[in-house]
Image (cartoon, rainbow, N blue to C red):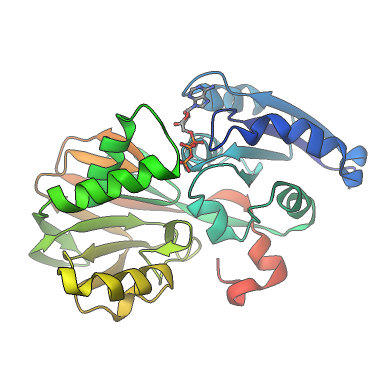
Length: 302
Ligand SMILES: Nc1ncnc2c1ncn2[C@@H]1O[C@H](COP(=O)(O)OP(=O)(O)OP(=O)(O)O)[C@@H](O)[C@H]1O
């Protein structure tokens, strides 16, 4: 236990602002009395990355992101290639990456998992020079991310409002794909570039995805017809989306995509890219804590 030296980087505005509780929770977990740790709160967007850059020379064994997928992306991508183990305390509204790795959504339990769980090396996906740990993409979900970012109030209700609004307004787009030696054109409603399996809240867009397979999953969903929506929602929320005939998932190490791809999201945060888009996997470049490997939940597949 005494070999641990942990830095917690907390985004105090994530989710419901529960990050302020972290110092109190840590003090009350007996195991933390035997380890060295520091806590830093972020003060602005991009600050987490700066904190990681300073921390790299301070002999931390673990750096833990306490926040949502945006904070996870900032910290995780800054840790690539360092060998410092990366953990997550979920404070966001979806927490897709943490859920994929098997982190509890309960703060105290996640803290205990950080001390007890195995570590492993995972892949990171590069999209036109930006790095993605979880699920990124174009089309409908990019439109949602861009609209959501303009809303004054964040949180799950604003997110649901953005989804419903865009569902009725966004018709889909046609893209040209160059993947695994094949070229084709296809009409897409959702075009996801997935390293892990889910957006968050167990909404799984890439059921085959593994963070350790050296592959990225290109997931294409055509727009479901209105009468198909109930079955679509059931399959989407139960990792059964592969059963739908208007869904496809292609695994590859690299992809090249052409079309109107300017509006994108990287792990849920909106970005504007300059098309065409090149997707590339960097295998095993990030060391993470993976509770699923220890408790073998869902077969322990990470
Ligand atoms: N103190 C701060 N003030 C304003 N923005 C911040 C601060 N600290 C971090 N950020 C930015 O807040 C953004 C959103 O953070 P994060 O994704 O962790 O929370 P969330 O949006 O509530 O979660 P989710 O994405 O799951 O809904 C991040 O892109 C991060 O850069």
